[in-house]
Image (cartoon, rainbow, N blue to C red; front, side):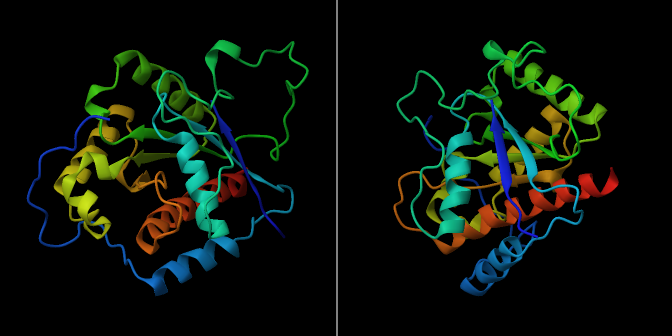
Length: 243
């Protein structure tokens, strides 16, 4: 069975250097062999039920959090080349990802509104995207909106994941060497902060570096993105299995 992900989506200076942990606090192997393994796992993934053709992932987060860049980064990894599936804006002012925009919410009167969705029509995983460099500065109003979406997902039993973007801006150590991502005290602090703000357990939080300026792929960037996506599709598949 083939599978497809359906996406929905509604810089300050780098932080000061801090001493890294002596040992990684989360195990992640960054090598060409590991990239091949996680890439193969994702490409060969099969949805466990024939009643669902597509895993549907709802992506949401504040403007400029890196939602479009994450979508493009995932596709770049899968295609092995620079891609632009979702428009991404780096100039400021507004967000290109408007499908999850409360100013144009889907109502019962809308021609695309589905009053009796099948399991194949429903959202199977909620992914919240937060920028690692400014988590502490997030407006309370935005966090409250995200909490409301999260609570609705909880009511529906939908699994949730947090993607923390811009790790290279959040931590000077990681900016120099992505291999330090799970030795970085700063990144762990950012993950804990996200966990506290949205009440999502640490094992459901994944820091990533999106492809932004690069025009070629990088093994280490690929692995952190692929690892996050592998977890997302498995969480989504777990949900459809339970229904």
